[in-house]
Length: 300
Length: 256
Image (cartoon, rainbow over all chains, first blue to last red; front, side, top):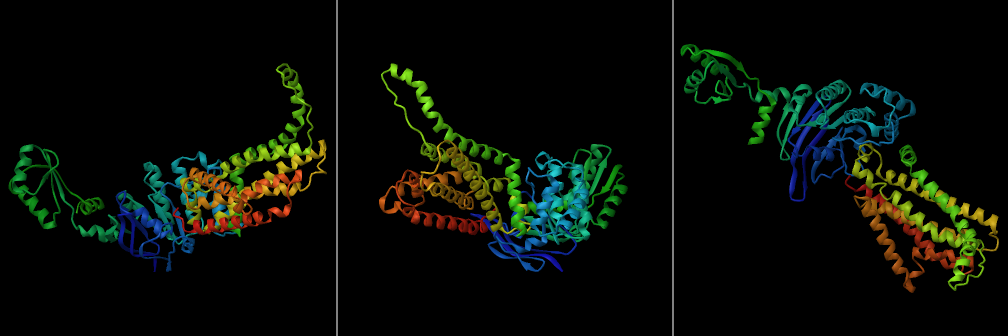
C-alpha cells in the first residue's frame, strides 16, 4: 500500500511557480529520497504534505486520507523533523518529549517508556540540561526523537543531514536506516551520497517538477555504463590516444576520459591500445553515479 | 482536553522559567504598596518642604489624606502596570512564529484553537491574579490606615479597569493571529485603543465603548451610579468574546 500519494499538486508564491503539477507516491516501509537543488520546491512540497501550506491544485493523501490545510488530522500519522528544528529552550529534553506525548494523546506510562527509549536511541539519555544550551547536532537528534515519539507511520525529515559534520551525518543516516522496519521514511536532501547510502527509492525535483523518479536500482540503470578514465605515462602518448578517439575529454595532460562506454566499446579501446602499442599507467571503469544523473538533468 | 492542559502547563512553565512571573509579581506588589504609601507620605513630604516654600512666598496648607487619596493613586498607577503587562505578552504567539517552535506541535496534531485558548487562558489568569493582588494590597493598607468603609462601589470601580485589561489581552490574541511580529501587535493594540479612546470623547458613542470603564474610578467619590456603566460593560465583554473567537478562527487559517 502507498503511505503517501501526491497527485498533480501545484503551488505558486506570487508569480513564482514553486511546485508544478507534481505527482509521486511512496510505498510502505521504504526510505524515499527527495532530491533537488536549493529552491527546487522540496520544503514547499513537505509543508503541503503537513498541511502547513495550502496546495493550489491537486491532492495529497497520507495513509489513504486526504490532507487538509489548517486543521490537519492526517498529521497524527506523521512524524516531522524540520530543517532547522527549534524547541522550547526552557525545557529539558525529557520535559519536551513529555509535552509532545501529551499532545499526541499518549498515556503517562507510554510517555515515560517511549521518551526514555528514544532519548537513549538518539544518545541524549543523560542530558538533563535545558535545550537552550544544545548544539545543532543535539537539537537534530532530539528532533528525530520527537518525530518518532508517537510511532508515526510516516517520518518526514527536511534535510536532516545538511548542517552536520560527517560523524553527525552518519549517526542520523544510521538512525533512519534503523527505523525503516517500523515506519516509512521520506527525507529531502541535496547530498546525493546520503541517498545512495540508505534510500530504496528516490525522486529528483527540478524547478518544481519531477524530473526523474523510481527505485534506486532503476535510476542507476538508466545509465547502464559509466565512462572510462585513462592515465598515460607521457603527454605525447595521451595525444596519440586522443587522435584515435577524438570524443575523449582531457582531465589533465596525462588523464583522459571517455564517456558512456558499452562493454563492446571498452574492448575496442583495449584492442586499439594494444595494436598501437600505447602504454597505459591506469585504466578504470567509472561506475554510474547519481551525481552524473543529477548534473545531466539539471543542465537540460 | 489533554492537549489544552498540556499547553497551559507549558505556558506556565515558560513564564515561570523565563522570569516573567517574578517580574510581574514584583511590579504588582510594589504598586499595591506604593499607592497607600504615596498617600501616607504626601502630608509629611509637604510639611518637610513647606519651610523652604514659605521663604519663596508660597504657603502650604495642611492637606488631609484618606483612603480616597490612596485609591486615586491606584487608578493613576495601574495603567503603567497594564502597559508593562501587555508588552510582556505581546509576543506570545509571534515569538513562536519567528522561532518555529509551534511547527512540531501542530504537525503532531495539536488543534490550533487550543494553542490560542491555552495562551489566552494563561495570560488572562496572570492579569486576574496580578491585578487583584495589587487591588487587595492597596485595599488592606487603606483599611488599616484610614478604613475603606465610607467609600461606595470600591470593588465595582476596580472591575472597570480589570475588564479593560481583559479586552486588550484579547486584542493581542486576535492581532497575533494576523500579524507576524510582536511590534506590529503592540502598535495595533495601541492604535485600536487610541481610536476607541477618541471615539469615546463623542457623547453619542461614549456611553457604549470600553473606554467608558476608565471612569468607574469616579464611583468611590460618589460621582455617577453603577447602572451608568451597564452598556459599556456589555459591549466590552462581547467585544472580548468576539476577539477570542476571531483569534481562533484566523489562527486556524494562518500560514505558520
